[in-house]
Amino acid sequence: MARYSVPSAQYSEMPKFIIEVMSLARAKKIKVIFFDVDGVMTDGNIYLLPNTAGGPPVEAKGFHAHDGVGISLARVGGLKVGIITRRSSETVAIRGRDLKLDYVEQGSMDKLATMLQILKRDGFSEKEACFVGDDIVDLPVMRHCGLSISVPNARKEVKEAAHYVTKCAGGEGAARDAVEYILRAQGRLKAVMEKYLSAHSGFAAGN
Image 1: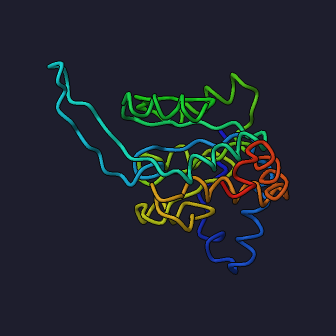
Image 2 (image 1 turned 30 degrees about the vertical axis):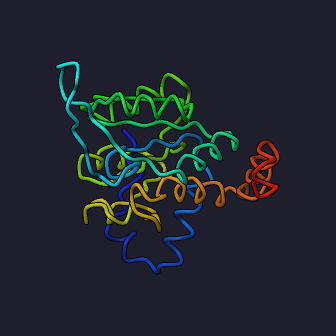
């Protein structure tokens, strides 16, 4: 199996500008982007609320509006977008439907296997996939995708494994950063934003 992601010692010792060029080259090939949820799409806090119906606790999470727009930009730009997470939550399912995500994979105990299954089914190669993670359970999948991205609040091992670390923290616009990084590398960010604004003329008018 190909191993695209985690930089080798030789890679990490290269001058910073060369690493940036190599990472941008990887980003140019991306056609599908997957996100972890807790700590990436959220700040990592999990709120367990009492279930008035007497069932198990309701799991609540907070999502950032900037990330929602970022995923809309990805969709306008022709990128497939999905989430792969170990936990299962109706809150995540609702957010997935709200954002019209292409893939919502919850309860995945093997994120790599889940990603590979999706790629094979939909005709993508590993080098065309990006994964955005924050904890060590994300390392296996990050090692087998064309572009691995970390949030700045990730574990040290994950940041060291990433080709790019977002400016914003998880739950604070990190997903938007990841999408914009890819679209910018592909030379399409400005055009995609203009297309998005033209479809939402209220935003363009400042409303």
